Length: 87
Image (cartoon, rainbow, N blue to C red; front, side):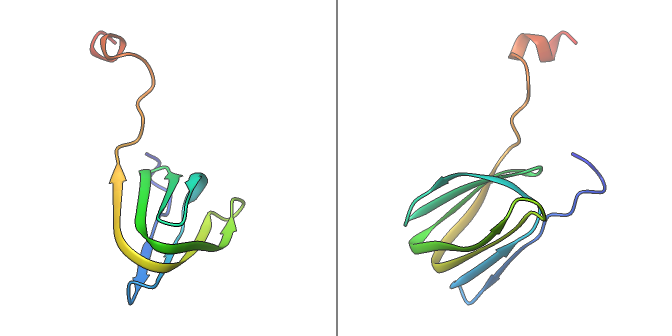
């Protein structure tokens, strides 16, 4: 992970989520949004979710709706398990 990379997530009243450092959105459903950042995969769960703003150039994203949870999955490591062990 780059030290000069900025990634923030702000949730307001569980109705609005603002995030910076977003690289792309992998999946967008009314109850689940999956996005990629350098910090890993972000999973936003809720109801009536909609992306009201997304800029891949600046990395800014705003999600509105009923936000129930936000979680991260670790960044994907390139190469197989054995390749990483025997580097």
